[in-house]
Length: 320
Ligand code: GAR
Image 1 (spheres, rainbow, N blue to C red):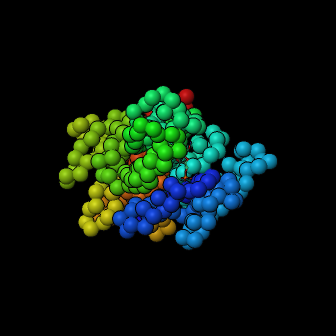
Image 2 (image 1 turned 60 degrees about the vertical axis):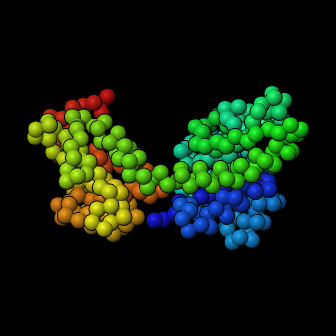
Image 3 (image 1 turned 120 degrees about the vertical axis):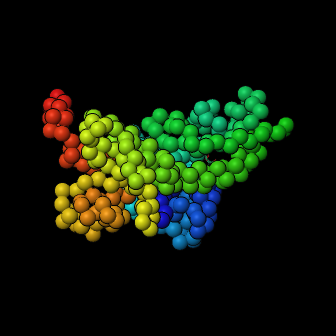
């Protein structure tokens, strides 16, 4: 299975970057680090990444418009065919455009138990409040600062006599365990057949006049009545020696099927038996699946077998 390609953005020491990097050395780790980038050319973490043979990039932000700097960072990230961005002590507020481009694919680590203490001085604020615990959170990045859905947290006990520095040092130990684990789980949710089936089901059953119907032990989706409906999609889990989990949909011709499989083998495969009658497999257990693209395939396949009366209604609805 291809590993998810991760770019890490840092501004300073990069010790979380190092934790992500060394965790990625395990054969079983589902991600690899393809780039470490910084807004500070002197960031200590860059030297370490370079020494470890990882590509690095830096661009000082001083004197630049925020949007322009974000764009340059984004270009560097894309050059490395990045699937995910991991912010690790990247002390820059990002433009909404940059955040939107990486929606659902950018994570951050923050040194508090979110939603408590967004922003800076998190440890001192936890101490001042008399909290029993500080901690760290990994969350998806959204336009609002330190606000996206939390993917994982570790609480760290506050000890009598703690000052910000001592608490921060222990929270960091927790961060080094938390971030690699959460990132690994997040990028490998695409290998989880139940999760994938749920996504496909949501898209397939949102099309008009559809219902689910098992076929040869696999989930299938039909359009039309329960009695005379026709299949427009099958969910396929590692059938006939293939390692693919995906959805089978109808192409226009065997030629189209063969061409797609040849040109984009990482996305398409020709399924045993079904392939002969024009069904193509769209692989879903890979990083960076474009779900709009899956939706387009489902709709096209649905259209090819749906009764005219139903597709006409859809056409009318789409005109408005
Ligand atoms: C980490 O503790 C991280 O949680 C924090 O910066 C530190 C970076 O250290 N991030 C933030 O405060 C983001 N709001 P590192 O460069 O040694 O990984």
